[in-house]
Image 1 (cartoon, rainbow, N blue to C red):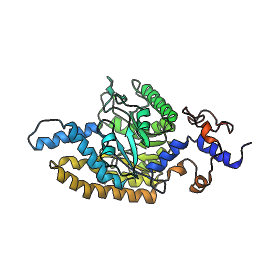
Image 2 (image 1 turned 90 degrees about the horizontal axis):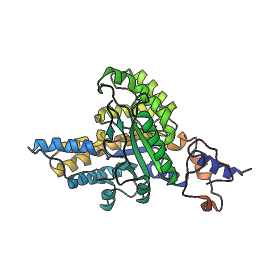
Image 3 (image 1 turned 180 degrees about the vertical axis):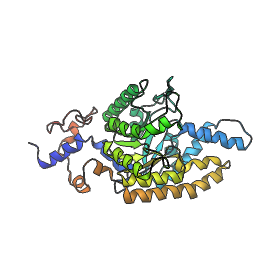
Image 4 (image 1 turned 60 degrees about the vertical axis):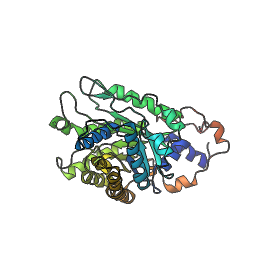
Length: 370
């Protein structure tokens, strides 16, 4: 029989909390275990916003690589100090925000794995592709704290659902192998001739968000969810019920994405989500999209320092007060974590392989701790 402390270690491992993942959660979290994270990995959206800004100047052109890099650095340097974790892409952001010293040393680094866009099917589904030349292994090698994967997922859409599920399973196994966090983002989508304004899509969306969490949230360490409904379309009571169902469906700590809505709407969504069990946010455009409306770089940076930073601070204060700490979602307390001590010789059993039991399928043996 294992002793009491060994049983606690086994409990951590059975929850998937191996050393790398455990440390990653600490790195991307606030001191109280909540999560205030900012996403700056939306390349296609940024390119489109740059185009609109250039049109104001009478220019019809794409942003250069250097202009995209400078935008990533601005966002990291000004918003990085306000958040617990910053999400960047590999193509423009990851190495540049590190090499420029823009990312604060105490802010967690999350790096996107997927390519912008993906492959579109005839029905309108988008099938996820990994960024060419990029991998989980490279994200781990560069010292990042977490891998982020986005998948568009509709459980009843036949052309993409199975492919997307298998992609998530494969990436999750890779993250287990390299002992790095996986933050999984799932997004619903219109298909079969629908648009995002179609009643059929909007009626289905809450059910899709909740069912997708039920099917996919065990295949990650932090789950990045859509808001399960539409403010003003459903009653506040119905939205709360949807959020409670989402909270029950999630097997991991969950945070709310912003999906490009305006900040006042995102703030309302966050207020509701935090009351219903969310651990925090991983929002992007709601915080910073107006940055791209300015044509002068100094004006852009000034807007970030004032309005964008204020927005992040407001959400951060809400998250700190009302968010559910990540460890509570794993059934742990701060006291339990503080009391755990590893067994002598643990490092011999810490292998570069998938951890037993981390997938939730196989029990962890006390005799095979790692």
